[in-house]
Length: 529
Image (cartoon, rainbow, N blue to C red; front, side, top):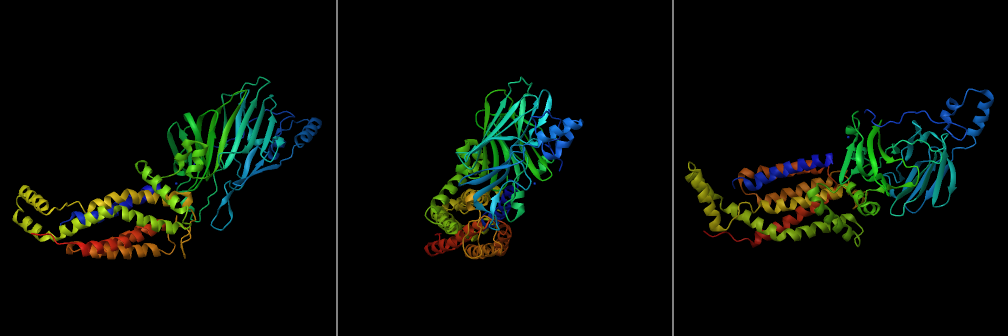
């Protein structure tokens, strides 16, 4: 939201200048969570990964050779789960996720979206057994069951503790259903919690890397509070673990999310951090020697309906602007999606949306512009009053209000239509800039993505030209004429970095406003003395 806030503030300042002159004048690195190599409980039934094997083999030649043969009996292999939404690849080295191809979404070069970074390993675990930290990402698990719909891994530690991880396809959206079992028949003294990690970050997917960097964050839900920490904050060394009723934890980019959502119980804590350039999220769950933990792992687009199907609170990750604007943003998104259901081109949808908004605001705009015309005609009378009562502010205000009342003029009438349209404008910005449905949505000619800026700045330039003619039709006060030239230039500068879809909306809206002003001009009747 930081980039959004900066843009909003800039727009408010520019539009504030416009209002003031037009209407109110006389007329995102220190690692936080980095798993260290820990001592483990070792016997012939444990299988550490290749780079740690030699260090863990006892110093007895014959026994050493026997143990090495035992260790090498379990090779590192991969398993795959696939459906219409994704293709997931797992490794029994840590029983973790190593690849995740999200179908239906493309990179700018046309290749499919791969969410797991190169050499990344997600959904690893660690725990404590008999007081000894055990990093399970360092061990090769046995594949005890593999079908087209699930794969189950198991490892038995030297202490006798059995750990199972079963992955299946999530039935509520793109992602995985993960079940974790701790079987403690040997009476191992378990630590109070074990940890589930997403510590490989996510791949960036947008052509302009800054688009992803600005939104790259660790996200979690503590009760009803959404916590979103970006790289700059996570680089601080004093990031503490968050204790409480944790609904989910994960990592997001601009348009995609990896979230771990406990299903049968809440997590006890979450810790978020960054290691080099990879943001991480760690869930802490209560270690219980019987039963299992069920975790829904959402891996997909930040899409309102998909997120809410997995968990109602997960939908909070979707950025719809400032909280007080979210009802407007959701309403605009619903209308755009509805129009798109029978109009395949989102550019045409935005044009039609502009027409709908202009028609909806026309009665108010007509009244406001009529008030502006009357204010302009009253300027000579206003100057006389100001000159006559320049030394008596109280009388000046009294006579001015009497003049307004006599001719039925509201001095703020011209401001009101624009002010009421601002929530729509800002809400539309949030929708166009953050909604996955608009990602890579083409319009025509060179506009092949309405969610990013116009690469040739044609739409901002046309918008500025339309605004110039619109203001030229309404400005008659010589003191305000510089605004005819300056305000369009300011707006072109601001809009040049905003989504092409927003430029298209404002261009069409300004063109319609020119027509609207022409209608008001030919129907306008001068006020009577």
